[in-house]
Image 1 (cartoon, rainbow, N blue to C red):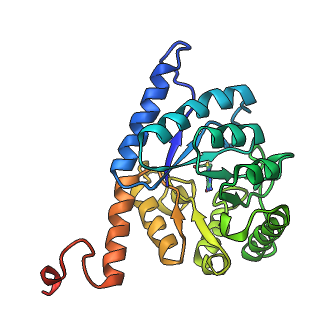
Image 2 (tube, rainbow, N blue to C red; image 1 turned 90 degrees about the horizontal axis):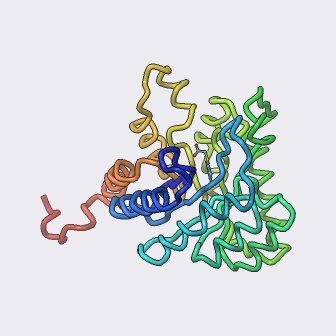
Length: 269
Ligand code: 8Y7
């Protein structure tokens, strides 16, 4: 899953054509690099980020979703917590709803039910403004697992079958680096229950591991995506699609014991 943030282009004066065509080009590049899903988001969940209005969010994401769905052979996921945006995105051709608030906003469950689409529910402790202020858990893995299990029950009751529900532990959302590492280490406890999405790409965890002098978090993110898949993740949400796909091809070949794309005879040595 390649990340496509659709946020205002500070270089264009109000016209939206430039940012839309840049978004489409970026999506195209990620598909060429091997992305199967493009996650389109118009709301920043960074601590301190300004809330986006509904009409602004719609204006950012809907035309981009429509353009990608029309022109590229890829599944479009919409990163939103707003039920109106979910509905409009589905109508524009989105194939997955990705909600960091796990459909807890009023109307969000109904929007997903009506869309018929699969949904990714993510765990977050607190809200984006304050979630990194000293988060604490008795047992982060069981708390996250219990939350996702409870959300799945609620969604199943509403008519969203379990096969349509993806789980995400929400790395970095109300978690210290230690919490994140604990969740990654024990990811199998989540993947035993559902298809799991892992989003670690370029997150602050890597500044703690590498030291803040390492500005480029790509290699670290690729390593983490590999570990996530090795521990059973179904989907990795990443910025650096080409590098991640290369790494996952190596993982796949190593697990198969041959190069999947070569004819069998060529693999014999
Ligand atoms: C995640 C996410 C973000 C994640 C899922 C960032 C929208 C922060 N992180 N969605 N969104 N999982 N499912 O650094 O980890 O990309 S935004």
